[in-house]
Length: 128
Image (cartoon, rainbow, N blue to C red; front, side, top):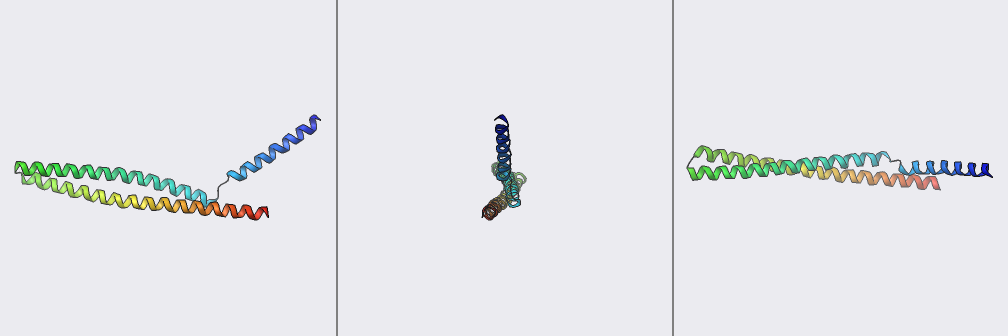
């Protein structure tokens, strides 16, 4: 009786291990999709930080320009205008980077979905 119980429990453990490994394995599409999605998230985060830096630079330029106008200092006023333009350019460039990152994230999601579909199709074929 103990031998039968041991055989049964070992067989059950082996089946459980095999079933769990098959369920956890990711296809290449899923792996690539997850990688693209993580990379897109990181790029978007960096672009948003750079966008904030550009906005801060633009505000600093506006303040410097206003101070130059009040004092009548043309050099300070021109420096403020240059800083403001540079801040705007940085903001626009980072917006473009953020859009690219969002697109990368979307393509990662699509690749992951395609991987899941192919995995399900393969499982359906093996079941039949």
